[in-house]
Length: 188
Image (tube, rainbow, N blue to C red; front, side, top):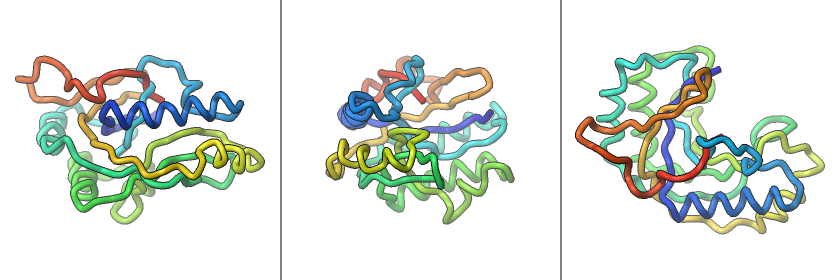
């Protein structure tokens, strides 16, 4: 399994992505809506590693201290060569690319994940569905209806431990409560 550092969307963008999840599920297609775990929520993964040293968390908190960060969720895209992963691309901004590079640098190299998170290799996105068969792609794109761009804000950062199946927010010790926006809902 892996551990990751992920950015969460504001409530409005989170709801917009969830409505697309629901529409895909209602059409009988693969959808992240089918993952009902408490931590399943729309997110943008900045970096993943086989293991992340907890000692780096204070530096990660500093790195993400500039949130919220405005972004735009763009068009749908497919990853893989079948079955596919259906995503909404996040239009990269200099601020987002710099943040991802800072997080990646703090975590250090990892040969197993660097192919996706190295400079020039990272494609920021929000996952809509996994294991989409080639014959389901036209129907899925129909359901999304061309999908208008969605203005969003990346409002908080969390850590995900895939081995322990748990998540936690990265925030300064003086922050008593999680940010109001983007703090509700489940995760894939």
